[in-house]
Length: 397
Figure 1 (spheres, helix red, strand yellow):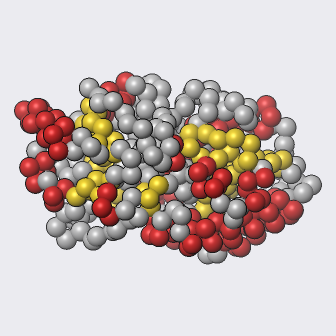
Figure 2 (cartoon, rainbow, N blue to C red; figure 1 turned 180 degrees about the vertical axis):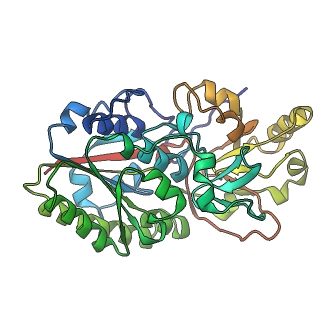
Figure 3 (cartoon, rainbow, N blue to C red; figure 1 turned 90 degrees about the vertical axis):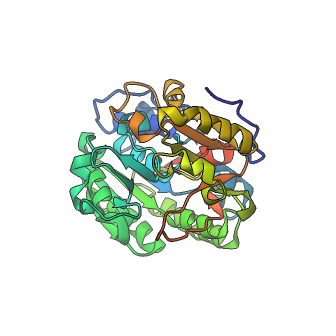
């Protein structure tokens, strides 16, 4: 069952285009150009593997949170705008946990099975924040470094490629258990500052003796957008600094025969406090759940026992219809929101019985006893065009 999807004032709703215009398809193009024999998805229409393969090196810079809406509305990014050749969709949900895993594995969420920030993992019967691999407000059953081999059954993309691979990431995450697992097959470099990241990129291109694939991840636009809003002075100053250094990289890369590609995992919208639904305000709804909310504030998974489902559906329709599109989670799998089949064997268990897809600029959250409060002005994870549409920036140096 599904209610009619609303028109979003942040742009019309948009679903992932896995048929040839999503970040999944970009990764298929890159993988094929770099020697992978896996052919799971269509290549990206705008950048097929044959075109990418004409260059000696490929660099993929992922700017966390740089939606197309942010890029095109603000003059703070002339270098990135000048080399934009189109747009793509993110994956569903349009969030870092799902999309970064796509960048680092080449897989859609339907295959890698990572479906949002908070995930209930049947393998260990615990709800985790999946990127730090820490439990949600409960004693840890396992250390984070023990979990990747228990929870992840996929290869990294770098293990599939026939070339010298590098990962560049911030110092505080480059060696994390999640990042280390998904960087297998590549050598890693850590950075502390934006100039340091771009200096590492330039050095890797300048000193390369064999063809290289370099993946660089930049998270700070995302963190500024969460804290201050995606239209904030802080976020735009961050974007401007990044853009200047990207322009310098283009100059440094001249003569290296490199495809420089920049894109994002998702875009952003702002959700003011008056548009936040707290489960504390709906104790009757909370009582119908068998476990706390999972997923994202904009795409939330609800676990409901079979005997309580009629009451759950009735409550959402009566009290939350103005801000929620209610879906059976299995319907979203069948409709291809997470990607084409075959599906990860635990995909269904990781998205609960229902998915609340938030309308307009609404969000929903709960808070467990002892859990820290994380106010967020900027949010993502939903299916508005602003969240789902990311730029495709590409230039051959």
